[in-house]
Amino acid sequence: MSAIWIIGRKVELPNGHKYMAEPFISFETNEQAQAACDMIEKVSGERPMIADAAFYRDGETLKPIKA
Image (cartoon, rainbow, N blue to C red; front, top):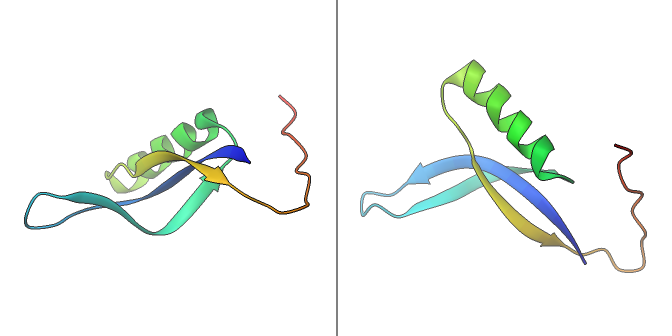
């Protein structure tokens, strides 16, 4: 298991409940996700929601991003 960060459109229901709507975009680092949110906010004026999540891949090894 590894941690990833996902971003998606923030939706608010009439009762005040907020959730993240599809489509989701996943990133390997929080910094990448924040940079994408910044870019989207500059273009659309709307900041997406961001959340950390667990990503499972049975039997596969992911190569880490070179910093």
